[in-house]
Image (tube, rainbow, N blue to C red; front, side, top):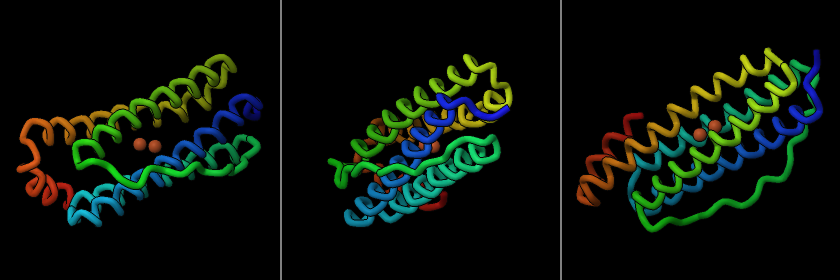
Amino acid sequence: MILSKKLSEAINAQVNAEMWSSNLYLSMSVYFQNVGLKGFAHWMKKQADEEMEHAHKLIDYSIDRGGEVSIGQIDAVPTTWEGPIAAFEHTYNHECHVSELIDNLMNIAEEDKDHASRDFLFWFVREQVEEESTAKEILDQLKTYGECHVAIMDHKLGKR
Ligand SMILES: [Fe+2]
Ligand SMILES: [Fe+2]
């Protein structure tokens, strides 16, 4: 059984979203470098690498299942934020949005009764739980302890 056209196209859109996410976090990494927060920059660079891995995972799966892979244009990402709290607020909100996109892919796989795709997509469902929770935890810590906590957080995030 090959992928339905609808799911194949939705996977292409998700590849684009993962690549956009990767660029978003790379841009945040550059931003943090520029404001002297090397630990935050390191964390975001790792995050960017992970998002690119997600894109590749989707591409490989689509190829395995006879999907029609196409790599589209990636929209520009923001380049600056007001501070670490704003950047992590953006990260958390963005991850919640990505979770909705994954749920939508799962809905299509369910409509298609495509069990292999459902099985494949569960990995992303679980990954999004982790992504949301990690971003929320860092955001909450930044909010609770305020900007004076940023130096400690920078040290901690540098160990990722
Ligand atoms: Fe992702
Ligand atoms: Fe993510």
